[in-house]
Picture (cartoon, rainbow, N blue to C red):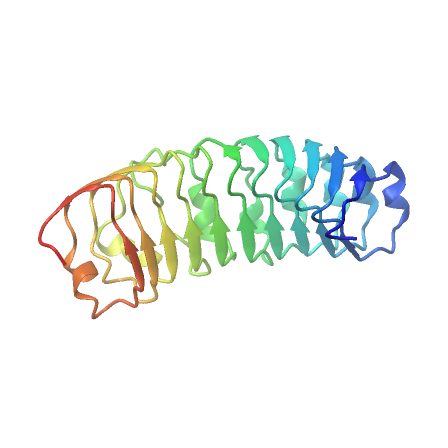
Length: 256
């Protein structure tokens, strides 16, 4: 049923289809809120509501989607607080809630979903501090929290470290403050391939990135970094970088 011009709302008796395993209503003109009956679809493995005009909050009954592996709610007008019950979907592999109006804190518990590979929450109104525990414990390889209002940690450092599982991390367009880790702590980030921290309020000197053997894309533009550009970023012999953006900072040093 995807990619049509279907209007209206999901029927309240949707939960009667208990053998349903795949439901794709993406890119239509559906509106209104998500009926609680959706939570009765215990056999559902793939649900996509992306690209509609759904609104309202996510019902707690969504925890009933015990078999769900892929859940795409992106590009709608969902709002309110993300229910903790969403973090109890232990079969989730892919979760995209981007481009909505979700607010307040990102609930704890996503790091406990061992199967989760993609967590995309970009383009919402989440605030509060980054949850360091999530980044240390998650098994997700793709994490995108960009375009929110997230702040830094109370320690003055961006994060205490990142799980080896994370390959893509986008925290751009938030309100992150503080400095990047330095010295041996940086080796905790050694598995990253893409790191985007652009358009924040990060400051201090840039650390050397000689630890980042897998790093291919590094975007630190439009922050408040000062000092010299580290030699490791200039030499190019120890990194796999194919994209580097340091524009819009207060860096100095020789041209390269």
